[in-house]
Amino acid sequence: MHSAASAHARALLAAFAAAALMGSLCIFVRESHCSAQLCSFSRFGVGFLLIGAAACGERICRGVSLRFSPAAFGSGISIGLCVLFYFLAIRHTAAGVAALLPAMGPLLAAVWESLLEKRLPPRRDVMLLMVASIGILLVTCFAEGGAPGQNHVLGVAYGTLAALFYSFYIVLNRFMSAEISLLRRLFWQSTAGTLTLIGPLLATETPLEGLTTGWPWLMGIGVLQGVGVLALVACAMRRLTALEFGIISCLEPTEATFLGWLVYAEAVFPGQWVGFALVLATIVAKSQRHIGWRVSCFMARHLHRRA
Image 1 (cartoon, rainbow, N blue to C red):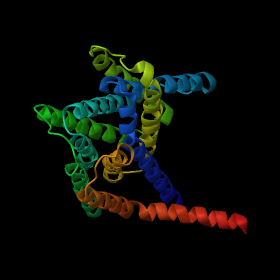
Image 2: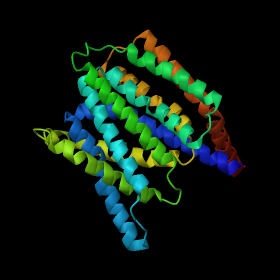
Image 3: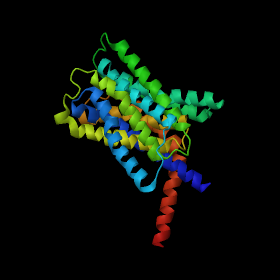
Image 4: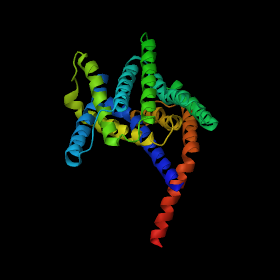
């Protein structure tokens, strides 16, 4: 019992860390001054080089199998397209709308998961996710921004596609066989994401524009938001349901808005603070039992060693 609760707590912590890294993505993208295509490609290309080197080393030293995994490869394509459509949505519509739509991906994943398992999700989790969704709506709808313009519909379409592919990515990770090692999973996900984004990058007029000055930020996107997030999500989805992961993921758009206020002095209105409170309340309500148990065990072991 204790082992299961401890594993669940670690999965929640991994989901928190993944959401925190994704929420900070706006800073890396803005500071790099590179195109959306180059940023999205870097998110997987850098990881592909690092994970590929580690995978080859493991294969040579320990004989670790890296045989093809259709589920891992499919999830890599899904998250690659999700990232690309998310950046394109930012280019065509208000940032609040672009952040809101992909955040609905976990909700769609919960629907797919319920259909595949032919069961209804827990009522409490559904209510928490509804409250979190209201909080996200408050955070994004009160965001200050210019008129969307004639490309608003296109931006909404891109954001909807990002949410759809995000939901596919979550479901594929959720039902992926436990026999697939983390290294093998990350290798095929980064490979698929890199191959998927080569075409959109080469289709731009100046594919490498801004690379000479923005490469440190692109490296950060690849290492932190690429390798880091893929590994954390893979760890989290081994224990969490799509609905649980969706509740934690609500932290992403709220953190992005908060960082915009803190770093770039963007206006945050009272309605957005109410949204922050609702999102944080749902996250605490969902995770307090498992995280609290984990902290209490850590404190008990610490006091026992001191005694």
